[in-house]
Amino acid sequence: MKYKINKMPQRKKNKLKNSKKKIGLAKIATLTTKSLSSAFSIYKKNKELEKIKTIKLEKLEEKNRILKERKDLKIWEERLTKESNKIKVNEEELRSKTKELELKEQEQKLESDRLIKKDEDLIQIAKELRNKEKELKIKEEAQNRKDIDLKVREEEQKNLELKEKRRRDRALKIIKEEENKQRELEHIKIMEWEEKFDKEQKAKEHKENLREQRLRQKELDRLKSFEEKENPVESNFSSGLEKFEVDTTKEN
Image (cartoon, rainbow, N blue to C red; front, side, top):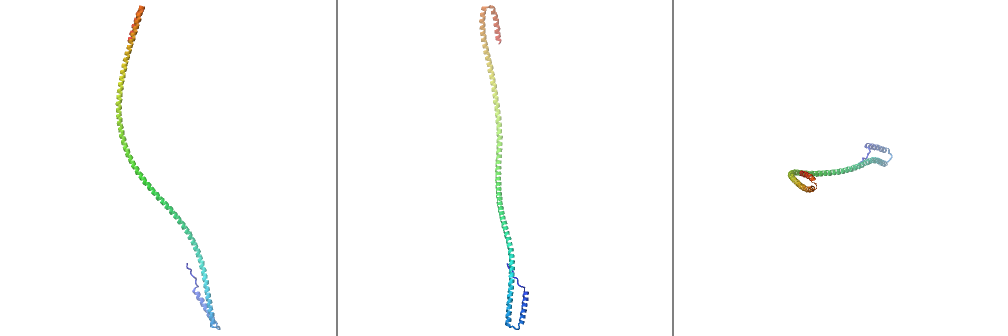
């Protein structure tokens, strides 16, 4: 940073020089008894004094200027310190914001990666679902064909079963008719056997009755002969009774 050096105004310098010249000339004019050498030495001394004063003034001005510049510099330094502190604070804030932005960017990147991964997973899932849907469609079509084939087979089986049932019904009908005929024949045979048995039984009973009648008749004859020998009247009654019993036996 450049600092300007404050110089004395030119007009003041000219006035000071003119006044000094006038004083010098007046002194020279009044020095009538002095020699030119002493006057010159005095003039020279005065010149030196003027130079010294001028130098002192310049140094004082320089000092004041330096003090002022130092003050200004201090003010500037304070300003710069404040600005530097502000800059540091701003830099800290900027670094903090930069860090936050970096964290946010990392989070956004992670979130973006997660979303990309999720999209990829969803795409994969959708692809797998489409493949599964295709497989299910193929399986459904195959199942539909199987169902149609099964339905056709069931219809064929049903028709076969119906035909078989009709055949069995006809066969059962024939068997039942045969069984009925057989039962009728067996019934007829049983009836014939029963009738034959009854006839045989009746014949046996008749034979047995005849045998019993013969036995009784023999017994009666024997009793009759015995009674006739014992009592002739009772013999007649016995013969009538015997005749009655024989007639009753015949009716039975």
